[in-house]
Length: 429
Ligand SMILES: [Mn+2]
Image 1 (cartoon, rainbow, N blue to C red):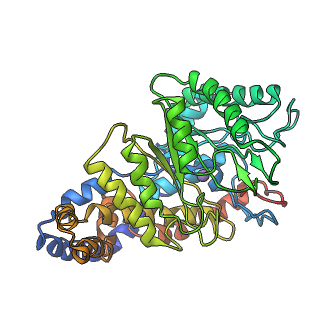
Image 2: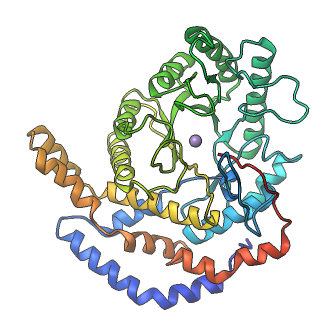
Image 3: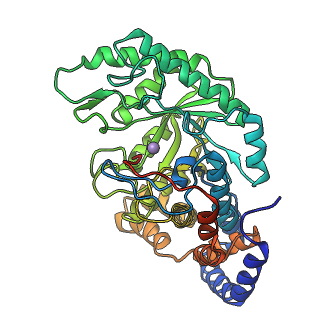
């Protein structure tokens, strides 16, 4: 396997930091041993953790105002895969790519799967797109897709989703993520109940096309592009739809798709309670669906979400097999650097959640000892787990300091010489 970053460069860098890492890891190991935690066991769990990266995240995103491309940005799925391979090679935590159709269309998906495998990558959930029109498309999604009042438009949206399943089968995926932009901008524009009826009837046709081992992940979002109402607006609508569709339908939580200040960690626990937590789109936000880097605004919330996930992992209910994915728009950074940094922030929260003394937490909860229950979380949150992550990464062949090696490799400069420039214009959000 020929990976994009020089293995010698990584080895040389890791060697230079080996003594410091050993010292930090040993010190943290002694600290954890005092409270009965085996650092090696935690490191093994962290080494088993992974999060997928979105193919579209490899390019510079944009706002609805503009996109500012950088030299060396990927221009097609092949170049995106190469960039995703850099992220995984250095971080060792992002071995899967989530593709998006029709953006990532090719003529031979078997060849694409092999190409990804040659870069050490597999494919995660397939994402359908019925929120924008494509050139030559027979029916417009301007007034909705799966919930459109026009039967032929609904049918076209159903067929597109079924095509995505077929593509996903060839790529080795087992999940279809469905987010629709359907909704309204004006009171009275559509009947709330009838539009949901139409969505459910069309979604059931997609559901019926799922292979036995596949899942359909319903991604809710309360606003944008529709600003008065959306058809699958919140986790309530999502779980009701998933329950009506059947056991293979699950809910996907995008951290930016809620009303402001919603208790997302509680939503996670609720969805898990009913066996409907299907997956995550990690990002961060200050105001709405900002798609900022994971953990950059509210790392404590990310930790609390992972605390619920760790609780679910330790005490699984029916169907706990969450699909973890980054979903961000990198408007002002090199997307590779953002995803390296985000993957580390996500893995850190996973590690910290695994360091929560769950027996002490449960005991304090049962005894109504509020302060000690909170302190059980606080103690884990305030630990610096970076030596655990670095040790797991280095042992798997990744880099001690992912950003330092990435910059030293001058990968983006090299790609700027090889790749054609990306055009200007408004970007994806
Ligand atoms: Mn999303």
